[in-house]
Image (cartoon, rainbow, N blue to C red; front, side, top):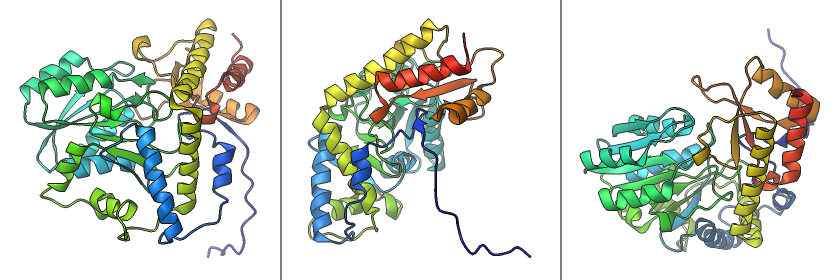
Length: 378
């Protein structure tokens, strides 16, 4: 008979420098915000916080119209909610992907019984826009196109501005859904200017907040599609119901929100706007390109096409004869640094190094480079 546990040891997690694909380390002021007095989710003072947070989300997404809110769930939930709200079963969906998370969009569309068309490319590459154009012209009844802007599994950036323009001119009735999980807060994200109808992200990467929330932004025309649906959506993902809680007054209760998480998100967005979005993007670009140049000077190569290389996340090829997993373990145990490996069963041997949020600076890059030099002298 198994003996019952009557007590637990006090928590004492080790301190880590989180330089993998996410989460990133949390800004001290964001952590401090989680110590503020906790209001209830039906407290009128918290309702005021929500309205201010909506304004912050609009500024972060650079979309003054439409609807910008947040799901009390991970970035994957933001992905799934987009498909659920914008696609009726049987409607045609094109998903462009060459990585783990783009493939996940396709899988969710498939489970939602969409008429799915997948456009794929080898890992580290992008699906050419010409191929997308040909597919759109052959499928003018396409309801939605989905793509990942910054593919965390491969370090590749998709040319979303050009894709948005292509859809507007080739298949104007199709909506565009884009995953900005890694890029929001780390580089330019402009859904309105780029023709993105549904944008979603997460809290724990370039925003530098704890994981568990999924900010999203919906265009006016996508809201019309949501409100004209024939089939219901899951209660938790119902954007209409969320709007009634977040924005409309008196509120209509939807769910018990993780209050402290929202304090953290509020502070993370406030800090982003205080720094200035352009300055924040430049800081991420400087840190990432510096790290990549230094790694190239040491003889390392990257999985991603250099013409489409992210700077928030670098997918470094593991050299022949090197045990990538062992190197990750040594980074963690000897240097207190977390870096990621390949994601998924088809992933090639890579290390995924992220410089995001508070870690997007040359000082952090130098710590990671020093660890590479110590573990793998070259």
